[in-house]
Length: 127
Image (cartoon, rainbow, N blue to C red):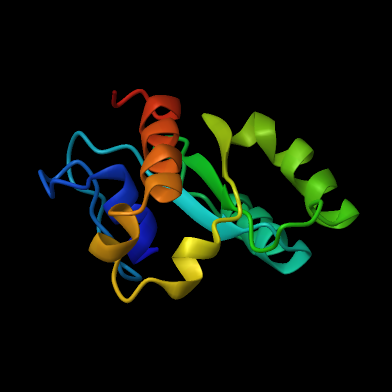
């Protein structure tokens, strides 16, 4: 999540903030739910969206590819089903550089991560 927050807001301008359990969404922020592209990750997203408070706007669903392989069938199915419950699903490709970076800033200094971050911001309407 920390790396995804940095990808969305690399200049730390307050565009993206990580929230802990029970912390209220800041005014004028749109929720972003970040999960891995596993069956478990998408099941947890489905569970959370099933309990989503009606007073909180629909979130974006950001799916981080966890392997350079196709998304498992159960995860792919859940992603399709959840599409109508979120503002939109966005996928971040598998990036080996994310596995080897010592920090989000280090990761964003690498071209593939920077390119994926720009695509994520564009998908969220932030570019």
